[in-house]
Amino acid sequence: MRLKPLGTRLVIEKVEAEETTASGIVLPSSAQEAPQFAKVLAVGEEVQNDEKTKDAIKVGDNVIYAKYSGTEVKIDGNEYIIVKFTDVLAVLED
Image (cartoon, rainbow, N blue to C red; front, side):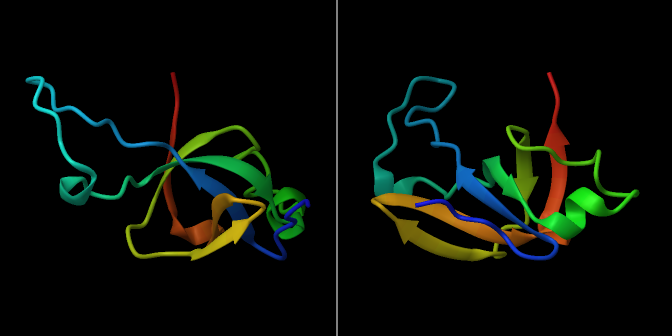
């Protein structure tokens, strides 16, 4: 099944949080904070067609999104988040 966002929304997938700290301490899943890093899987048509936003975010970009934003959905055993374009705070570049 394919998930196509409407309007100015994006479909993102959380990037897994690391399970150890920098000093090597292993954190149990209950102590880990949910990551705010995600990969963009789909972009709505309004974002793609708008001259100001079309080059800002593309499929495959790694982004940081607002902590309590979006709607979580589960499709075919995979978890996705649908967020508004304005909920994306930054694009991570290499």
